[in-house]
Length: 320
Length: 320
Image (cartoon, rainbow over all chains, first blue to last red):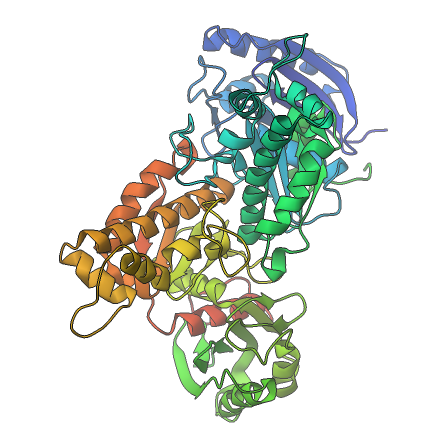
């Protein structure tokens, strides 16, 4: 009954969520505010403080041993700062210090949101039991994280696994990041829709021109829609194969809105993976849909907190 | 005077080298045989046994605490087998068991040759002091290895860091590995020479049509030769940037024959790296020439052995 708890924060471009989480990953208490992303940095921080205020005022708070933060990136874990692309008021914002000002002496771990989701999938989702795994979110952007040797690998700054911005087409289209032919530039939802429209696909009566609508058209047999998903799958396969060749993962778990296309994405992805994952030591590589729901960010932030909490070695599955 | 030693084996397509190495990385005693790569597997193993025989018969052998093997790949560290591309008689060859038959109960560590060279550069070479580094060999092929969080990251099979076979041009030329547009397919010595010849470069009176000759022509101002190195540099930059984006390395150390081209390679490489390493957390990424000589494979195998030797935690720089 008196198990340790951690506090988790999931900071995104639309909402700031918080929870108290036990060491089996159960969310005991939640709080949430919208991210007023276009307001100044202090306003956004005010929402974080309100979420934290609900948590610290709760009865179980004295049992909290650490705080984990998963944030839209880029983050800088070594400096404790965040610069989320979609929150212009936060550039090098000292989020860890500001959280500490509320939570006191508890250890605080900061990681990117793709890293957090990967931690959650490894702890409780589709990457369970895999000591070397890539977690991915394919949505408006493409993010990710890595499990290596059974442990989360956030990297020094907390951004490792950022597969969306590796180039798989070095002469390809310019990416907003400044490079060319990045995985995200080919495989994100908006790019799937853009490519389908450019090749002549047209939305239906509902006017929906998103990747979800392209997925529906592909499922109905529209060749242009199918081709746009196949191209996305090819880029994802090249990126996943590159990751496996570099660090020896054996599974890539893919979540996010684009992954909801299901077979429309996964069938050509599995086929393309055989084209790019060719060396003997990566031929066993598989892909699977993510299985955590919308709480993945909170669960992953909790997993990261459990790694740094006092007396906690790794993520335990048993209550103490 | 009674410091611990390890035995190191460096197994390549042309020679099999062995040495006793102390915990400061000094080679005390060497043995070497040619690799009769086209002979049957037992003949090749016979040469390994001769090298080991010289080591085990030496006076310092009783002080040896572990054996490290760096081998041409692919290797399978988890199974203790090797299948070097250039040694057809060895396919899934149980090298670790066969070495153990000679060396008895000593722990044996097996890693790929690119991983070994990376371990050497981290211990004593150009990657010293970098906790997150990529080591590369750009030569007939392109190989590599990773240091993550201050430790060698061989991966479960010992092949991690194999940057030569990540695709940076997903629609590019077919690579012998089966994929397309691999870094090696663009940046290896033979491909630098092939591209220069295809674009109209011609060897001089000596008939030398290797990448070294292309490098000399580039240094003399030949635009086709310069362009071929620039293309190789672009592919290397895309691959190095991808690695940094995935695992957060801050330096790539490059050895091998192509790296001997010096500024002909490194100047366009540093320029191209700015084009592909764009995210905030990889902008500090640098490249440097490798500094270890031909003993890098042996020193790296010794470093791997020191990781697994009894009572040895990591690579020590002080004699015990």
